[in-house]
Length: 202
Image (cartoon, rainbow, N blue to C red; front, top):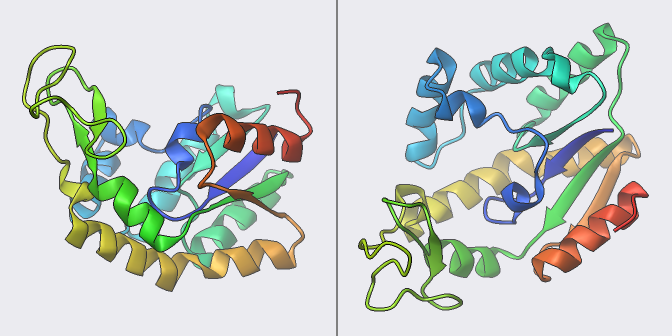
C-alpha cells in the first residue's frame, strides 16, 4: 500500500511509521539531509524543493516498489501536487492519507516534557515517565531536552503546521483519500484504529 501519514508535530506519526522516513537523509548526512537539518533544528519547515527531491529519490528505490509509508511529507499543498504529478508519471496512485489528530495543548505537554539520553538514546517524559534525579536509568548520563522540544520551538512548529499544512486535510478530503485517527489514545489503540482503516488484521 502507498500511504501518507498526516498530523501535527508530536502527534505520534514517527511512532506509527515503520516502513520508511525521509529522515534517512539526515541520519546519513547526505547533502540534502544536511541542508534539511538546518531548518528542522530551528523549528522551521524544510523548503519544498529540498523535501520533494529527497522524497522522489527515495521512492525510486527497489524497496518502495510494492508500497511505502510517508511520514511528514507532504507538508504543503504544493508538495502534495508535486507528489501527485510524480506518481501520475509513474502510473501510480496513493491508497490513503491518514491523519492523526491531536489537540494543540496535548502536543505542547507531550513534546516540551520529553527528555532524552544523549549517550544511549533512551527517552523519558517529566510527567509520564520521569528520569530519577535527571539521570538515565540505563547508563547514568544526564538526560537533556532536545533543541526542537523547547516550548518556543514547539509553538513555532505548530504555528507553521496550522498555517501551511492544515490545507492538506482539505486537499485529500476532496479527493476522497482522507482517513482520521484520534492520536490522544494509547499507542496500541491508535495502531488498532489504523489497522482497521487499512483493512489489516491487528
